[in-house]
Amino acid sequence: MRKTRYAAAAMAAAAALTLSACGGGDDASSSGESGDAGGEVVRIGIKFDQPGLGYNEGGSYSGFDVDVAKYVANELGYSEDQIEFVESPSANRENMLANDQVDMIFATYSITDTRKETVAFAGPYFIAGQDLLVPTDSDITGPEDLEGKNLCSVTGSTSAQKIKDQYPGVQLVEQPGYAECVTAMGGGQIDAVTTDDIILAGLAAQEANAGKFKVVGNTFSEEKYGVGLPQDSDQCEDINAAITKMIDEGDWEEALTANTEGADYSYNEDLNPPEPDDCA
Image (cartoon, rainbow, N blue to C red):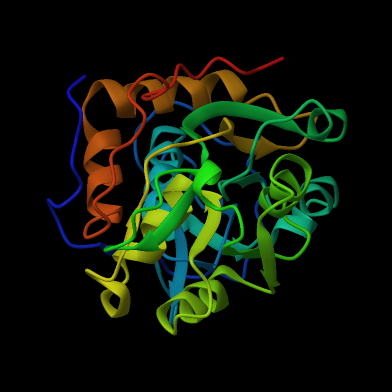
């Protein structure tokens, strides 16, 4: 697949009606025709605070995770007005699945062996990598250039821990969220921000940040984003088939392009599009 430079389309906001009725995904039809789930509601966990991935702006949900979730739900038989998006913070995702608060999760949810002990995964639908966001005029090209510089990440994140473990000469500044990191970088207090590349691309693509920052494009980890499912779910194969169809028909690349506009970002074509095959 050709390498794509993401300056093609504006970030799309997609409206979703929040329904109060409860409905489980286990009984959903997998015929792929919209509305086949009848009156069922599918509760899908997403992030509400990650521009370009999962973002809630006054009840209007947008982002790549949201677009993939909508596509998959449609293939499972749910029309768009049968989707209930539920905020799923990183620390709560396993409990939300175990406690039947959501039917599935699309929330930059990396597939790991530890997480597989309590939840199941379909996917992956994207393979990200830890990277750096820097000012557009910065000459930083990777973590090896950060010696003695100020780098921002989020407290308790795997990204912050990796820096502590592998790059002890970096001055790590921890904030409660990546938006705070970007604000600090805009004010000149820090030199770079680190987390997964696609998250950084979403931050750079925000209207307020347009043209100010760039993703370095030198990843130093692999994060397989999967669809979190309850351990007793029987939908993994159908979800993987939906993701594969989205990739094959071009909708995957279109969604990724639209949601990273303005970030000067290219996905790692050695890893993406992925092969959704995780049903173990």
